[in-house]
Image 1: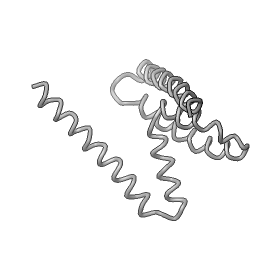
Image 2: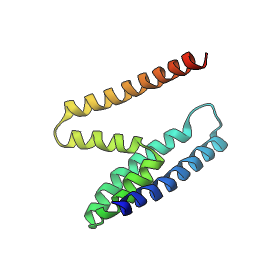
Image 3: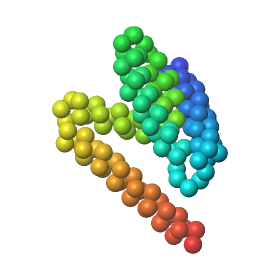
Length: 125
């Protein structure tokens, strides 16, 4: 378990650094008018999650999942985990659950951000 946690932590550190560089690069290229860096990280992370899921399994390398999936991609973007889980629900024939998961995750996340901002305003005055 300690080794697995170390792999996740290492991957997470690398993923977070990669996300920072993605954000920085997008800001330099496209400016600050639109969250291009976040969009790029979410799309790239989602693509890599789908690719790595099948690639690792097809080569018997699922032991690298803590490092690459939970760590690297988790540090780069948690959106990739969300997208992967939604697609897997859909592929399992659980279309209703997938739709509810997507709508609930996005809607509740937006509400949670708003609630957090309201709480901060209340506390900070």
